[in-house]
Length: 429
Ligand SMILES: *Cc1c(COP(=O)(O)O)cnc(C)c1O
Image (cartoon, rainbow, N blue to C red; front, side, top):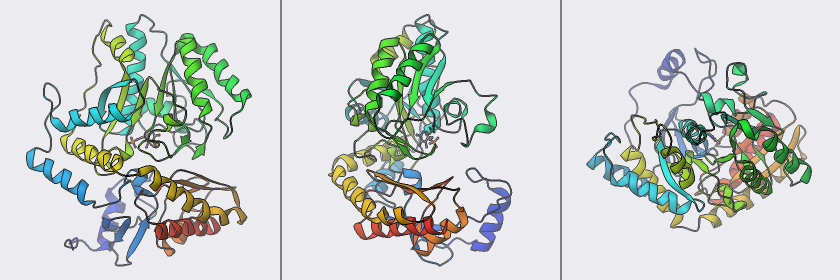
């Protein structure tokens, strides 16, 4: 057992409230967070002595192999003994090179070049910069807007915010200040020609000013946990090709098997021009993301007046993060990950079915290792979270959504428990 923090829980919470920002939080904090002492497998051990919670969130969908994994721990420890970091300008190292090769080999055919970024949002910034610069290099500087569908989420920095859902999302405060992008309606769950035509028409109409279409494929995450037919990805690919627009898939939430395909693009056998990955990239150990692009994009940029991609974060290619990312990917590909995701899918389908009968529930949906219960009202966060904790499960609902994206190593008994907690949260939230 690691030694206990010298600070007691009440002092920790007091200092936390006074000094520490939390995601989407006020200052000082108004709702006390739970203090985690350690984590192992799929369980978080709470510092207040209340015991353990099964983690239904995988730390925002990143800890796909669970916590304190011996293989991932060893990868970090081994790399730590060599170097935790060196600058990436003018230097390179094996972890980053191996990671780039793994990503190129596993991602849709045609994505050949990897920009390692330090967070998902930054990888989206880089993807947008790549697209805008590509058109500039080709003498088309007017192509600088982005098209997306509503209901998306792409991160909290400036360009990503501009393609997040413009209404009721987390960023509508900034609507007037953000670059004005082109929005079409959110994609329906089922394939329909009418919506396909909406996509084609919008891309055609705005082609002269569009650098790229930027979407989350198949599952929209933090913008509303909506699912849509992969058929729309083919429509986007064809319309983008027909009208000279680049296509960016943000696979930060969907990548590494979460939806039952290694990347959600695989459901449609479509290759985007640029693809962002993050979240599960390092198995939830360290912050790292990547923007992958095709040779066409890379060569376009490199033939331009400014023949370089002017972006280079201080901690680019961080060896610790790259080493654990390699280990996480090898761990994933070295097992029948699809069987695990399908097993969780079945468990969530069975376990969440009772939620359909609950008053106040408007929809229940499951895809891969993603389970969602949507309410017909805004969730009472405190009541919902407390109900889940009483079932021994950690969940973090938002808006009208109670959902789970558990680690792939979650056993059947724990999947059932998570599903019971989602139902309890839906009943009381
Ligand atoms: C989480 C997320 C991001 C942002 O990633 P950060 O690492 O939080 O900056 C971008 N796009 C999608 C789809 C995400 O789920």
